[in-house]
Length: 115
Image (cartoon, rainbow, N blue to C red; front, top):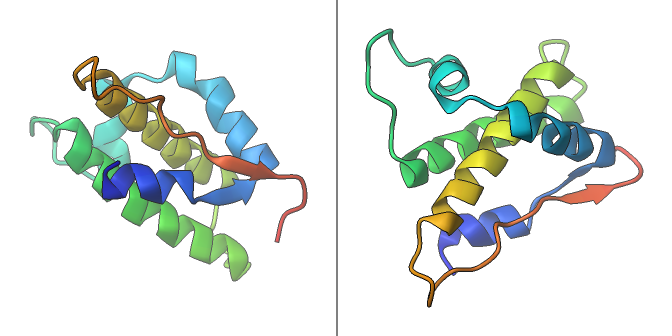
C-alpha cells in the first residue's frame, strides 16, 4: 500500500463533510475543478493522479486545521470540494493499477460528532 493510500485510510473527518463529498463525487469534473482547487494558471496541464492526490492531501490538512481552530477563513463548501477531489484522485489511482495489485479506493472515515 502506498503512503498516500495509507494516509487516506487513516483520515477521520466529520460525517457531514464525508457524506457531502461522496454525494458530490459523481458530478465531479476534474478538468474544471482541479485547476481552481490547486490554483493552477490557465492553460497549464493538470498534474497526474498521484501528484494531484499529494497536493490535495496537503490542502485538505490545512482546511482541517482551520476547521479545528474555528478559523473564520474556513468554509465548509471549500473543504467538501477538496475532499471530493481527493476521493476522485484516490479512485483513479486505485483503478489505474494492475489487476493483481488492484485494491479498493480508500474511504474516509466519518465521525458522527464534529470536533
